[in-house]
Amino acid sequence: MSFQGNSRTEPDRRGFHTAVIYGLGAIMGLAMSLPAAVYLLFPPKSKKEDQWVEAADLSKLETGVAEEVVFRRNRVDGWKVSSEKTSAWVVKKSDTEVVAFAPQCTHLGCAYRFDERKKQFNCPCHTSNFDLDGKVIDGPAPRPLDRYLVKIEGNKLLLGQVEKKEA
Ligand code: FES
Image (cartoon, rainbow, N blue to C red):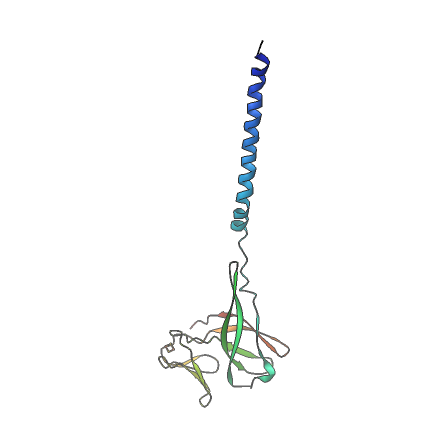
């Protein structure tokens, strides 16, 4: 009885099985790393830049007066989307021109108010005052009020991101 035939085919069979096992391992490794590679190469797109929120009806705003409008906006953080309440001080200059200020003082971030009599914004924390264009009148604030990007569609006032104003 001879095993010569078997011993000749055994290394081929073993080599084939080894190749199949390595091949399956490579396919499984690729399948498991593909989602991570996709995430790293194509991270979730931040929608912050092109996010516009309807904040007010322009026909209800008085011209030449600042009014505080409160609205909700979605915050996108990676895959997480949360809704947050925020506000803006809106000055309607005409039916086609509107300015919307971020509600934080540019000194240390306190909430400021509008003084109707003096037609200026007053920050109670360290007494910075701003005019209707957001420029510093007096006080320690180092720069004008920050503004929202503004878009007008019919009577709708849409607000975008806040742009920091330089001194
Ligand atoms: S935070 Fe407004 S003046 Fe200081």
